[in-house]
Image (cartoon, rainbow, N blue to C red; front, side, top):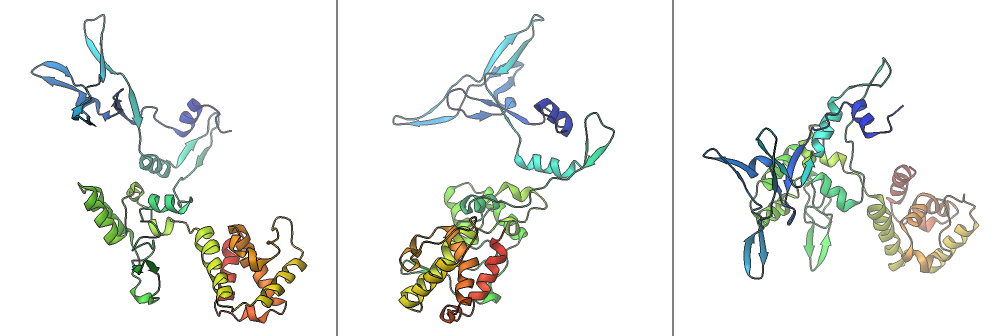
Length: 324
């Protein structure tokens, strides 16, 4: 049974309670200092430094000057110095490395051992956060692709993602990512940092310190914005705007959707698809692509089936991707 207390967890997992870095915290400005940088020896005398963090006010810059340590005199006559506030820190990389290397965990009160291995497999979150975690720029950047170095051009205020010459799509590698991220990490100004990021399409991320971490592979695809609210919606909007799907076709589609019996967990689309498709949610676009678009085309709507050569390929891919 897994322990129910922190003490039990530490004992079960074999964690060292004080296996972290301690910082001294200023009570006024919350600046962090290493203990050795605050307590210094000068000509045999112990000097306690105050907070020297610079604050900016209307009258100019000045040092905080907050007290960091307190002196305690022991009965033996010796003096010791304790931080007024302490911040304990241990990087996530250290934890992940420990999880990966700790293979034998002894179960309390039993003679058996369970062999385990923990590792970070992928970054599953919303796209802006996931791209930052994996060290990439936003999807609207010039080099917004997380898998290749293809550049997205801007013309008259509009983004052009065209140019499907796959030979020019140079794959990104962890070696290049690590090299440029180290340059970004070591820059001294924000301008230099942003210029390197814009030129190469990389950000620094601490996860690169993990030997097994592969940024492009571990970054999850966002089906909601990228596929359902993106590709599917734009395809359907284009068909309607260009009158490839005419009013009578939309009426047939609506009638066929009404005649279908689907389970309650799927849900129906809004009744009048001709006027309501612009307000479809991601789940409704998913249902349209995976379920309704196939069924309506099979019921004699040949105009829909022949609209685009890649339609069935897209539907089949989304069926495999979205059914989970």
